[in-house]
Image (cartoon, rainbow, N blue to C red; front, side):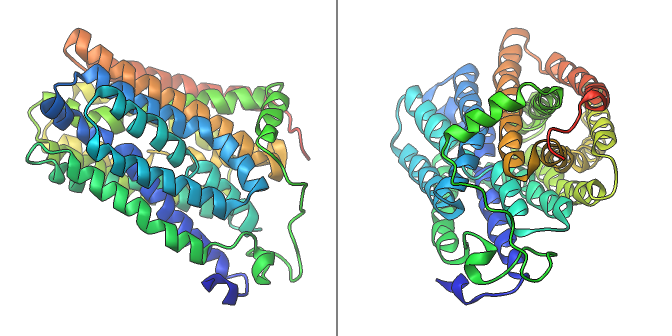
Length: 418
């Protein structure tokens, strides 16, 4: 394998690069249902509630699998876990070319691809950073987190363009082939640990090897959850991340294109707004990682959630002009998931390096639960009221509440690990 020839701390950046693109593809898959809503309605006659339910199922499993995938990375290894996830993603999406019933869509784009993409999610980034970096962890976590949002958003204009004739199949081909293309790259370039290629973690002293714990099975994820559930810090991380998912990929990522469509804005133009958010998220979330290395993560979370909540409350009162939406996209994009680096930092600080990624995985489960609630709930509100306005205002209010929870609960929580 190619990575066997590598040595030195700088190979950590190759690992980050491979992980970045794997996360990019997984997030792109999870965002694809937002451009499939209308084509599936036209092609099969499925209503918005049905297609939103499939999207919500995939989003929920994307988060639920996270902590178990983190435990598997400690037992069967990072590379095998990534290969399994990418294979499930490719097979499920390509198989959907033959779907004919709503339950086929829920099974393939919801259940199977949700499990596969869940193995290529935020827990992977946290595990890679802990295993390969002794310094600059916040910055690297910010970069990997940015790839998730960038993958969710930057592909949307192209995928929307693929559906310009009303066909959904080109999107399935694009995503499925992208996932399949990553499989040989991971196989060739992803070593298990720095020690396996004769290297040490980036920034570590020569000869330093991270402490090796015993091999852990998936039961470790449950054990870690039971222990962490006694800490108010865990519930703060879980609850605020629930709101993070509710206000980002669940609401904006799934429904902004349709919301813009209700206001006379074409799908490709609306997808361009999400792509613009993705580009600015790459800046904002990477910067958040840099800030997390230097400032109190609790204060950063307060600022991020407050700013995001207020932005969502204001959005329904804009005139949906090009200028107003571009300003919203830039400002909101900078804060899209800037919450991840400080959340990972708090998990590592309070629960230790071995359990930190697992606890972050459970927080990510909360994130995706919130996203699933918003994906389905906003669609239901739209069906019942004919408007998305109350969905966006309600999500914004939760964002403001999360800001005060982050600064309040965290002050009362003592670290479990020194």
